[in-house]
Length: 268
Image (tube, rainbow, N blue to C red; front, side):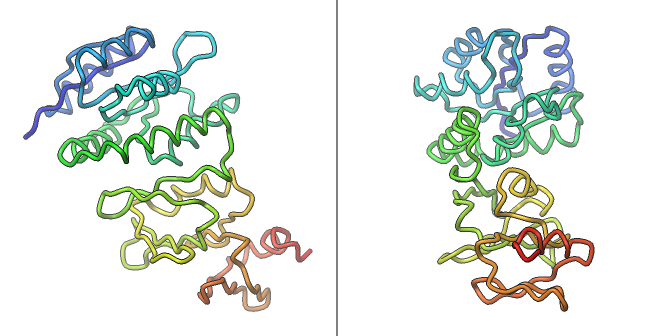
């Protein structure tokens, strides 16, 4: 098993100790080489140790700065070559709405405090895949998307990263998505149907993509198995509760969603 070097960055000593203990107990493939309690010391540690993995708290006790500022600084210094697992206790905080959505748009791993062991193992497994098959340009694109969203909050024009079932990443513009559907054979994956491109099998369950419906008014979860781009709807039959999309596919509309769908399409 390949050993990965890791840095833990959190401004709370107690949280750093907890993360270190969890990592030592449950991630034998990781070797914690340093800890940092400020964004500046984290920057210095990353440049010095060049770790494979960085556990990075989003919220630091620094005015108007977060972990995303550190990522931005590392990108500008061409010093970000490690995989980052973001950690936060504020993901559900309504005053900080962009962090979770930005990370999901960029397909970057995030753990919420208190850390759950299965989620940690999944995030570390993702880091291991990256370490075994490094794609620096792809990783750079992911971080740039996350940082840009934290700066602009523009979830309509910013592209998103789709993690595929083969553990690769594809950059997609939301406007190019016709619809997203649950894979009927493998309920844990999805198909993303695109304009002028073959469909993509996404690694995530369909519920993961609800961030599109929450941040982009052109998208709606019309059925438990379908998220649809309103621009791509060519016909809606309220009686049969069916939609015909631009690629000719027909999708179901849930009975309890019918009234909301009609309003969304401007039919009421």
